Image (cartoon, rainbow, N blue to C red; front, side, top):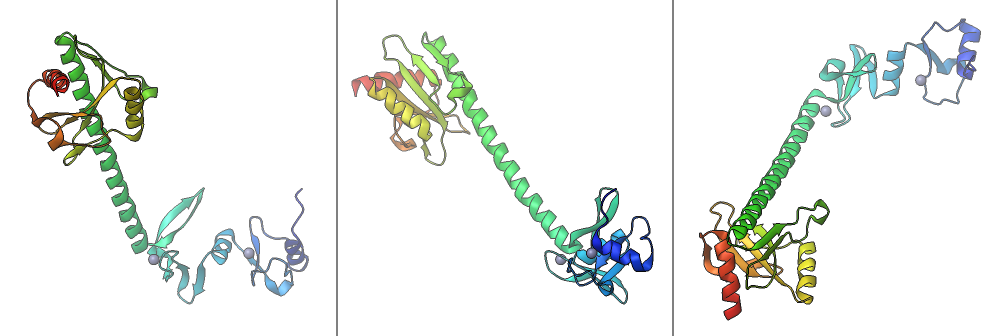
Length: 248
Ligand SMILES: [Zn+2]
Ligand SMILES: [Zn+2]
């Protein structure tokens, strides 16, 4: 048997056994004040209201909205199920509607942003795979490092006969520039320091015009090879860049 709380014992001593399921409430909110005059028999729902931001007025219960602080009759709040009990939501209907609309707006924006980034990554990835395949057709050794753990590193390794081994990173052109990520930049710098050759490739996401640039933190479309970009097969452009670079 659980020990009966002191205030319940006091109330029952005078009024008789507490009906099953009923609560004894401290009217002044002080749980240490177990004066009989401070104790009140209440049903659980009423008890909850007394402790929530509720007010009993002449025409019934009012509840305070947590958002706008206004007191409204209970039918101005959406019903909320808590276990088997139905109670009122924390905010009045207009506040609730406003908050829901705001929540949906933010999440819709975020969803669209993620969708946009994913689509760009897929487009970038498709173009890289196509470039690698096309380089092979021209007799090059070419491959993409698909290692997931290498995400953020340079992922195209290409070797045309008679040309140095090349590490390349392809990016979609945004506005007028394309750039490696910080990790890719560091990776490229290490490769160059060890005597390797790196380049940055930019693709116009719509026209798929290709721009090749010496390894750089940020590459400008207008400084890239060839001037104005190339509509030619991308592998062909890359080989032309290698030749142009040697004669430079
Ligand atoms: Zn109470
Ligand atoms: Zn409100």
